[in-house]
Amino acid sequence: MPSSDSTPLSKSPFSDPGLLLLKVLSLASICIFSAGLIAFWFGASGFNATNGRILSSDLTQHYAAGKMVAEGRMQDLYRDSKLGDRMGELFGGPNFGKTSGFNYLYPPLHALMVSSLVTLPYKTFAALWLAASVGLYLAGAYFILKCFPSLAGRPGLLFMAGLPVFFYGLIVGQNAALSFFIYAGAALLLCRNRPFLAGLLAACLFYKPQFLLAPGVFMLLAGHWRYFSGLCLGSLGFLLLGLWTCGIDSHLAWLGVMKNLLCGGQNQIFNLNQSLRYFLLSLHDSSPTARGLAEAAFSVFSMLLFAASALLVRWSRPLRAVGSQHALLFAISLVLLISPYVMYYDLLLGAGWWIAVMASSDSGLKLRRNLLLLFFWGITLFSINFEGWKVAPTAPLLLAWLAGGFWIVYQPRLRQLKAGCLEDCNILRKFLCRESNT
Image 1 (cartoon, rainbow, N blue to C red):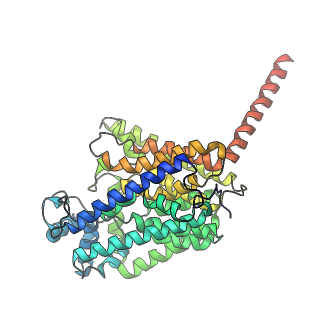
Image 2: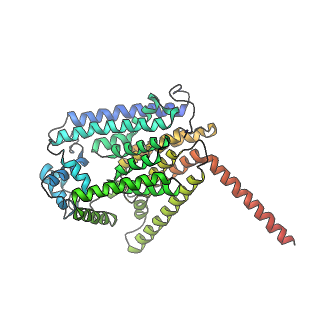
Image 3: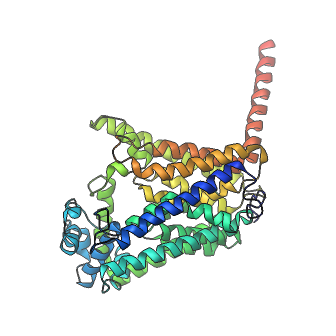
């Protein structure tokens, strides 16, 4: 299905002042963060980068988990903080003084896959993952840009490579680039009218359940049942494979950790949590009543926003300029807002919707579009700097960005909805006036 495209950026990348500014920011981001990343690695001493932290520090949990699986201790990944203890044994130092209460958050099959690579020295393991992450993200960026031909070419790739959050994930060794690659591939399959295959591919995100289930339900509510069917079949396949290779006990232990995470018992960096849930909880005192009200407000608002957005997307399906790939990319970005635990590097999953907004074609909304593009770029830049804040403002900023982007992309249908509501109100007003006169 064709996408909503504007004048091809590859032909005139300097014609729009807003995009020119974004291009300059992207170039600066690539130069500065690349230099920092290179300095961390080439100035490293043993495990430690020049800033004193372990290279790709978040990757250490997967390396330690793979070691434990290779030692026949899979169930210990999810019990009594033994993963944190093993990380301390492997890496030591003050960086791992906070691992008490730390269990593995990923499913057993994920740990089993990693175990085949832990024979490598950690630094080699981390370097390979760094290279793979760069390749996966650039491949995902290529897939997304193929969905929007007006952005294809070097300018579009420059914009995506210049997102600060891309480098944040690389520095700490996160898997956000892999997750982005999976969803970008699914979006491209949707763009080429292969919804069932898109759902099968999206099931590869089994290691992040919140980003697997919620977008799937959204797509179902939006009327894309073939995508949902493929997602269910693929997820079932990964579940059966995991039960066959890792056993049911390890999966039950993993579910216990996930439950503990939702209840706040898992070791977490709460002051970097970007979710709407934590934002609302941070606004109140620690009394059970206040927390209960905040939790209830979050649940009600999230469900209403989720359902209303999905139904509006479903109602907009006749729009020729908006395809099912738009629905998927918006759904993923929406989950960034309503997921109970979202870190700054997870914002990379919003890059696809960012590009969809960039490709919008209404010339009358160009200024708003450019402001939204710069707004998201700024959110990703500063998201890592809220650690010292009592309340991270990312969630309300994301909400404003999502609402603005939704209007930009779906505004033809939304205008029809607004006109229809006004017409209904006028009819009701005339009816009431006539009844009062009689």
